[in-house]
Length: 146
Image (cartoon, rainbow, N blue to C red):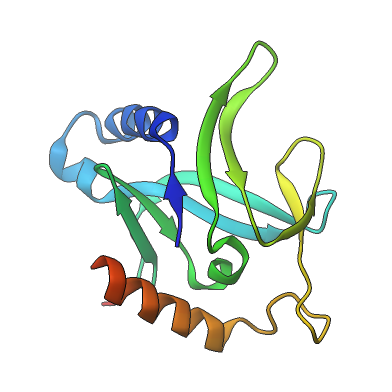
């Protein structure tokens, strides 16, 4: 469902180590929380922070790091790639999102591609369930539910 580049893994490992104080147990409970909120110049904006796994999160684990996605954001970020880039003027995580019809110049917000009915992925619930079931059966990942 989500891909994370080697460059992003390296930086994310460092961030997780810092946040956990180097304690392995604390590090295991954390991940990069990737979400979508209303706002930004293109309609929706990415929200990223280091945080714990929450109930009903979709958890993508790759190369020893986790991407945590809340259920409401799944239809908007499925198939995306999380990368990290550094330049003289800007450094940070970047999202390459196949569900974006357009993105703003800074890359922090996007307009979702409309479905045939004109809505961005409808309400996303049926598709979300299918995505999760398909991904879980193929990858062995899990949706966290208490």
